[in-house]
Length: 380
Ligand SMILES: *Cc1c(COP(=O)(O)O)cnc(C)c1O
Image 1 (cartoon, rainbow, N blue to C red):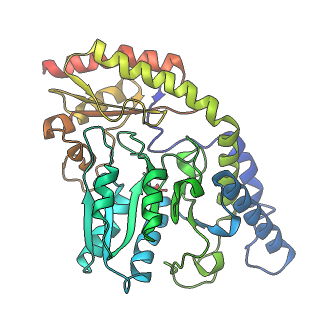
Image 2 (cartoon, rainbow, N blue to C red):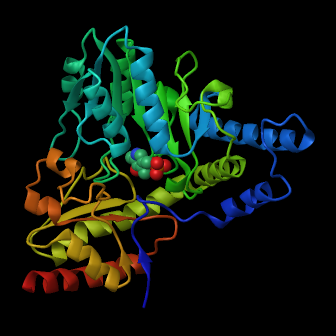
Image 3 (cartoon, rainbow, N blue to C red):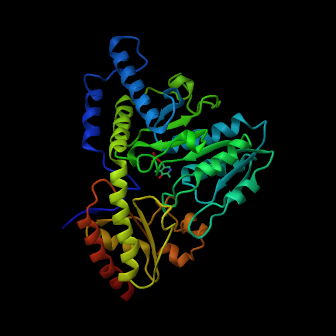
């Protein structure tokens, strides 16, 4: 049986080039980057070179990045840290209703701790209304958090425009750029981000290593306790091999991003156009053009997304409903609710995400199998 992977938004395989450059850092170059001897210095040098590469790619300075264990940690640290740092200035935070759980959960925590949260709605294609956001800002607002591109429906927000407004009011702007870095051009200065998170495993790097941009001048408390690494911002021995892999992954993206995006857009648009032609009772979610090059997202009437995924899996196709079911309890996705889908449609959702190794053949296979599977499921 063929095995086709259409879940690149959940994670990507590491590029073989990435694994190749990481390998020495598990063996002969295994040093602790904090050690003052030559083995340590070698690790330190690799770590700092990786930071340079990352910073260059995103239009920042190397000292504005810390390496973390995942974008979950990056988001947690930025949000909790900024809220604590600025609590004497105000206790109001603005976020969209379609953030990732690694943003929403620390926000819920802060709400319980007495912060006031404005959850901005989005329109039916998933865009935050800029004027609406502007109106939500008050003298008490200390933080605005926005996801640059939705990990579910792929809609890309007008971050630069929003960033300009937030910066003018001297409010901290945190951007979750996990789905965009490595896939579309991201420049922290152009976005006016004060902090920004990204994760290597979403752009062909290893899992368990990520970064947080912290703009020069921003005071952010450390989240972990017990060491002075990463300029005191992130305790714990650095994951040198991971950082080297992250940097290599980003460098490969820089070289190939434009071409890859063009190819993926073509395949994505084939899916967005063809699936509604071949299957009745289906809607396309998200913005038609202001969307990730690799994301297609659909809702099917009278089909359970879970059964759909299982049936596709049996046909050798790995796709997603768009959000990992974290609670175990079946709740429709908060993102799909926010764009106004009924529970029935939300439960009948399918996210198809493409990547570096997706071929036209893969897409053809999906276009062939999906109508059969939907038809069969609707019969039972
Ligand atoms: C995957 C993802 C995260 C979490 O990243 P990890 O490195 O897996 O912790 C956060 N935000 C978005 C938008 C994501 O897609």
